[in-house]
Image (tube, rainbow, N blue to C red; front, side, top):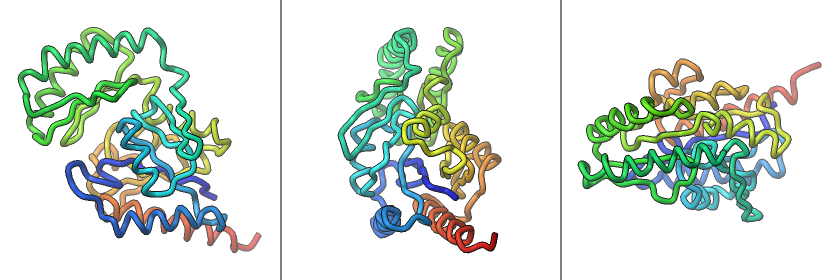
Length: 253
């Protein structure tokens, strides 16, 4: 039985620079609240590359009680008790290397793209955001080359609107494992939905991996692809999990 459903944000629950579908958000909130009284309804939480302040806000929309994962797997935040936990794999060496990459991006890359900006509140990865997808591709190539020439402990991912350098030890798969240990729910009792290549490590960890129709081709290969985009796919996956849990509960032994 699935006890916890984890959703990515950008490309799944929301889409950058667009207003969320509040009707679907409300439905997800309703299912999550129902999970507290109905054991066949998995609780809901978040795993995203976004920084903590934004994730905290979305957790409030959805009335989430379980820890939420931010900066991919760099940190966990407990909404109900306002506690912050950084990844145990975040070493001083990693932080120093991230600072070097951040300085390179700030001084050598961003001046060439004045409409792009650094995700300043991040601590465990280096993120760049732009509404111009062609600029993202150019920045991704430059940042990737700089990182791979110097370091081996990082992953570099991009979406239509962002580019991120993530420590391999603090990726989404590591974040889901850390969450599992913290709340004593096995990854075999978890489901996950994600759309990007950075979601693949988490999708491979859980029992039920899902992806929306807008997911990257590489991501679709490791997940059950739903014929719905963004929040509609999250709602559909949630309803499938509830139905499957209820079927298991009433199945003859």
